[in-house]
Image (cartoon, rainbow, N blue to C red; front, side, top):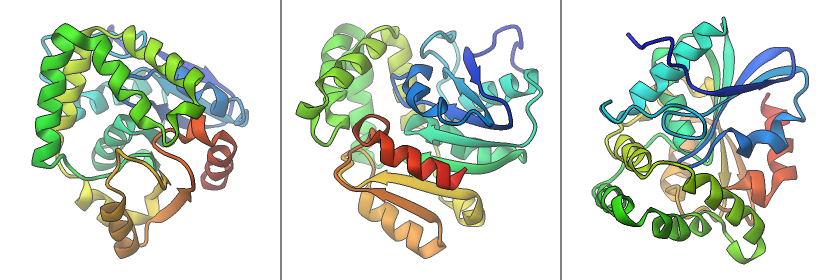
Length: 252
């Protein structure tokens, strides 16, 4: 059991049916501010995941997506949240997949620039490189990683600077911990295949992080709701905020 005195940090806006917002790797709740303001008729609960933002970091915990999901569910229990929808960006989508598997109260999952596949061997090696690199050169890694999330980074210098500042507030050990959790996550293909009607996927057509062709084939095979955004990478909340908002309003 988790210590319920040690809860994840969160913010709440709006009043109505609950929607949980989970950010991506090296992000925090602030990435959602431009979107949640447009859903006043929903209770929007934005959560800082383990080691991110203002949430605690337990360096002795074994890195796992399932632990992150358990921490989210513990918080929702404390807030007396029953049935809810969840929007998960990247890492937040992996946590959402874990909750879809384990939490019957999750009614709808939106994979926001995320996917159900495990890391392949090449990606696992890349995670290992990150884990070692951030021990001594975290700021250098951040300066490499953040611009790569944008299809046209030269057009989003202010956003890149802001996301870099968020990432630099993380403890290097927390960055490595989260990289290890992603490296070791299981496949969520089966759970999405079993519950296609509960899943929607929002994807940038120029995303360099998500395996686009594999995801397209998976979505078509299982008739999962798909929303593509042209001229967009991994960060539609910054690259194409109006389109992202329009899509989320359709889904929710």
